[in-house]
Length: 332
Image (cartoon, rainbow, N blue to C red; front, side, top):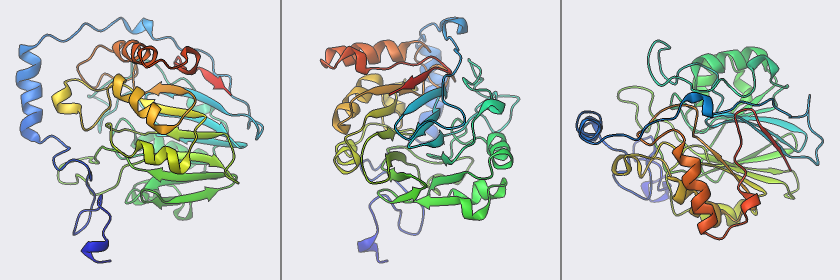
């Protein structure tokens, strides 16, 4: 492949980049400004007591839902159990207490996982959007690899080696570039563009890809689901909707967005999430990536309040905004 043929999100010489913004990822100086200046000179809104985030009993179908039924259960953050086309799909599995390379420090979970790990049904597909610690957890990968060896892992380019080293069979790890797809059983999985970045340490930024996923049943009929992973607002949501929609359900991140000057190219705020929903050609939305880990400066309970307000201001049907409690199952 020549440089002229290289996709715009591939870096010359290897690795990946955001094709829409040349400096999408803030540098170390910006991080210091946020931590040492912004946080000490500007008061942050008060967080609620963690008890306001309820956890309810899941109602997914065991061991699998009928092919005609779609269920989505929010485990917490970006972890969801999706039952689609008679297939059990898990997104960005994260069962550890902290989103951190070490369990002695780092953002602590506010709410226990909505599904106990031992209560997971037999998994067919695990979707991994990127390699950040709040989405890709070493201990959880090892547990899943041991307990659910039948599962196929679908990952962005460069991440297969990570899960294989932690016990996932080599033939069970499938890598996709943006706009590529793979059929697993009765489900077609397509990797979609996202505005984010990858890194787990010093010096590996952009070495592996990041993505969202479009899910559909074999034959292209409904239901269809879009899982955004972790992303800022970008111009390709409309193209995703045209190529893989219309979606019955869009799972869109609404949290971890303040301060805006630092996060604008990494995470959507609630208003942008509603704008992305409209571009996607979707019928309903479940907000994710909030209320589980304290990652940024907005109050923990602010994202869904702003998202619902933006939803109603856009004139969208009130019953199509489906906010879930941890563990709650939505059935369509």
